[in-house]
Amino acid sequence: MKRKFIESLYETIVKDDLVSYQQLLETAEIVPKTDEYWKSAIGLYNSLTEEKKTILLRIIEQIQIDTISHLLGIMDGSSTLNGYSAEPSLLLDSKKTDGELQNLFLELIEMRDEESPG
Image 1: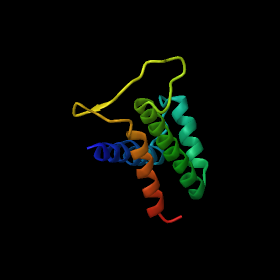
Image 2 (image 1 turned 90 degrees about the horizontal axis):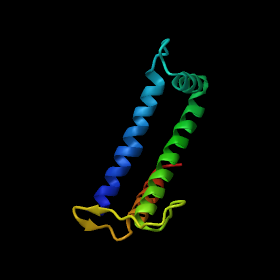
Image 3 (image 1 turned 60 degrees about the horizontal axis):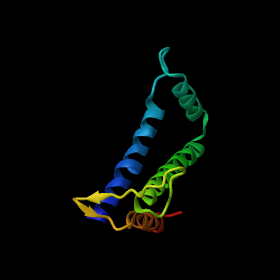
Image 4 (image 1 turned 30 degrees about the vertical axis):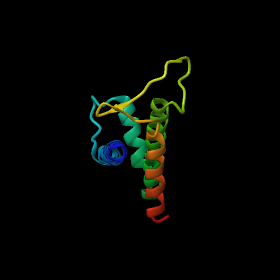
């Protein structure tokens, strides 16, 4: 159950969202009411070569992975929050996760990296 949860986190937050970001950046039209942040982001993306667009998307993916890992570490108790001393815990189907989620997530990422060519 824990492994399936971790795999679902990765598929939903990293893979699916990365595709959504890429599609948004590649297809969004800038119109007068477009937010200034998105105008800048789309302009930046469109100014990049294909190779640099790939690098930017990999950076976004790594930030997603690092953020999920850190959050799981907080829930597992292996990482702390600044200025907050209570110990959070996460239950899956009313069962404790036993502080394993961050390790399982990082194992999944490591396996994925070993399976992907360069």
